[in-house]
Length: 339
Image (cartoon, rainbow, N blue to C red; front, side, top):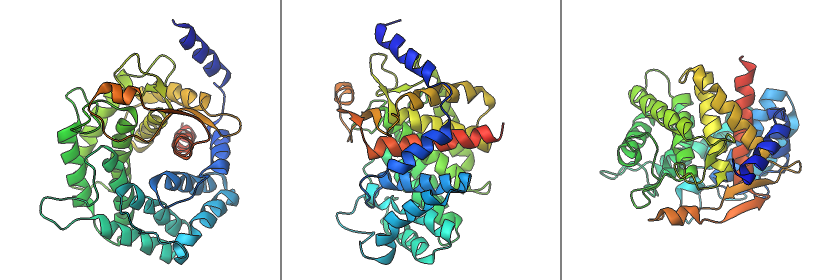
């Protein structure tokens, strides 16, 4: 074992008993530091609403409500140029707020965004797509929530998107490449695929025509990810590259998807050890002040493996890393409650 690996394992031993709710409170208090209409703050807001529901502590909901209020009132435009799927996806938090508070204006904004991104052009499923695995989460997180409320029915849209992306981007071994023009198993790209499918499976019931196919894709993906978990429980910046560093967001997203998978009955209990080790790896990368480490910076599609290996690493306060770690903490907490 290398000296670095030994040091990481030593840190993990110290964080072994770190409780998910303690970490969740720490992260919900800090993030998002820069509120905007984007999927990154939305992950933190959605997490804060869930944390309030789990604990009965109103302050987490109040913080999310306060930060989203300018969009609800129209003080800030929720749908604004330049139109990007990553920005429009942020409306899933407004959907969650609308449901939590029975707040019609928030729900209506989410519905408007869902309608806005669904394309009627021949051969196009959603507008503003990039063709990356990122799209699988950006579209599913919003459309599945809106559809469940009965405002619109997007089952066919999401089914077509997830299955067509899997046909292009899922390798025979089950891992996802990031994009056709980025043919490498980027960590967060695999996380986006995993959470996108998990969102659809969560909000669309057994009558969803594409459920069996998406569930098959999801299970194959989870088995592939489990096979590439590192010795400290984390997943890597390039999942199948042993020399790649252990990265927080792919670890958090994989833990979240696996934990929800067991809790929802999509996966069996053989994944529990992966989740437990993965959670310790997440907790080890969250500081007592809510800062995070080993977070890959924002990343587009790149043609070479070196492009992904050499992306900047963020250590410190980071809205993206903090929000994704919050999602992992909440999913692990909910899974532990059903033991």
